Image (cartoon, rainbow, N blue to C red; front, side, top):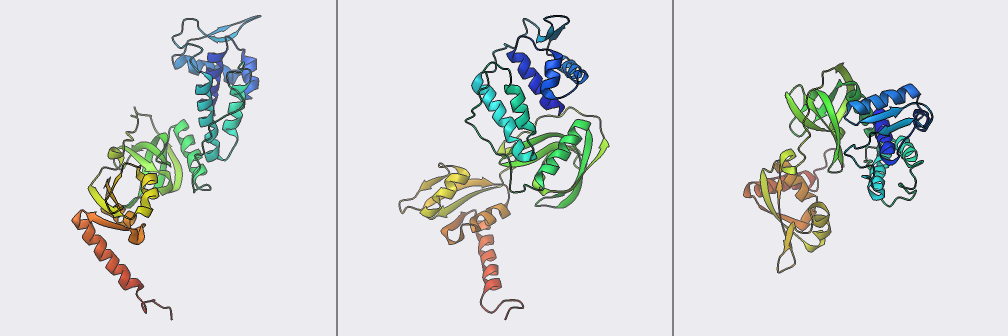
Length: 308
């Protein structure tokens, strides 16, 4: 893909004094004309690139450019390449691993072969997620809308969105774009999208970066207090950190935290079975009491709905 190639070309130019178009064409397995168009794209992006003809000529970043050619240290490059390699875990291809090999070639040892950072961005939805990401990437590159059915806690709806960014956050993939229904920028979780198709071309608008602060995406509606048995410590530490609770004199754990809606609170507390007691707020405690009574009625002996 073009963006990956541009990153690769820029990386090589930052590390080498000069490189020829045939070298780049061979390294990235494209034509010399494609490399020329890529160089033009980098120039339009504000990177002053000089080309010289004849013996000893080639492509280089102009002297005096404010970016120091040594700006990318070996550890920094390793981190970049680890991130690129992690994308293979989503796409199901070796596209990014091949880019790593091309970036590593001829760099004078700046990028050692061994890596100490491994990142896996794959999810449980290994069969459905990659096609969505590929389709959304294609729509972004071609400036086409995407259309999909979206499932949220409030409703099921059909959305048409101008996509601008794919976002990996909170261990989940999202797309950030302009929603025609809401007439505003929105964040959509890919796992909640079905029947995804690309649509009409659109004129790109100035898209702000998404604000991924939890209070922006999941505004707190309820401050809750829950009392847990000591055996739940590992889950609390894993999900909310070691400072989310205080240890009571009897060893129980008093948790406090914010939640965006009541259903999230009730479903979360229920996953702990009889090892958790919701103390506050009172209205949710009452809802949990009513819910457990309903469950007792549903599962009590003799109430098997067709089972004998």
